[in-house]
Length: 293
Length: 164
Image (tube, rainbow over all chains, first blue to last red; front, side):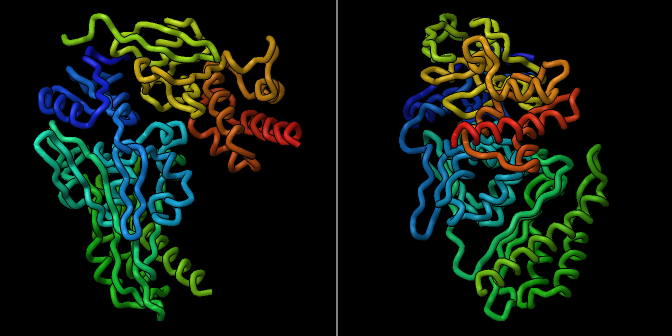
């Protein structure tokens, strides 16, 4: 189990990396944290001619930028770096909360936020988080820069809108406004495994405890992060009480159409999704109570 | 094939010693440590980042050495299990493993020791729940983890004693 032959490139400048990608495109892969690509290379599930290691790129790609309204996470920000940052926990608690369920510290020490998004495993946590946060994906190539929303970025199992000559340069999200809360819930057979199902929620609540608007996203139940729009519509305008929590659980169960595999049956995943949506929204309610206490 | 025939010159500090070596594009850090430097304490189990046997510290962080290329370690500081014993004697953590039967066949042990070393440096581990989290990134197929948890908690307590 060793990688097949490839030529290793370690460009120092982004322009150089993009030029290499333009030249080698289909025969190249971008190496960031390597926690998904290296296993595929070791198993020779992926065989490439050129490996373009972006870890030596300068230009501040390894530091999150926290502005008043917006948080930007460039390509070389490690998962562990975000997890350890008190500032990021205040700015984006949903991401910090989800990172605890992403594999293990040894993986998060190397793995990047953008790398997990570009890999787009259907059972991964971060794509659902970025969908719930309505993130903007900034994509660069030698020909220029374009931006996409999450719905247009994630296309299928392990498939994104990234073209072979493109790189995911950064992902950006708006800070949630006051009165908007977020929660992440996951169940995996063992902590650190991929989710059997996971749910990321952002939810605005008014002073009376009514839902002013929400985004509810499930992972592990579809080829891409799935927004549960029926659940969102059901909850909006309603008071977040026990009755509503029961209804959203049932609605979430009905809205997903997962597949069975060795880890869990489709029915189990449906029921699990309902439970996780209920727990996530209950968590949101608890957060509001705590904020008002 | 476009492999760079000459390889890449890297300079890497391994267990305190600077090593200058030529490495091929596709040589993993794990194979570099084991086969080039003959530091065979680092073990290779699954070779795809799941089992944790190959865990080493890179610039202080525990990482899977099977998922890094040797060329990527240029300029880095690597610590392997060979760095733990002090003057030929097991260190506190290794002693705790021995006392608590935290190993049977020993294949996974070096990875566990490096993961726990990194965790202990970060701060107190505290309770069993946290100890199990620290251990969760490594797989042992012999011990059933009871001894491992005890060893971690004991090493944690001793670390606090010496810090006092």
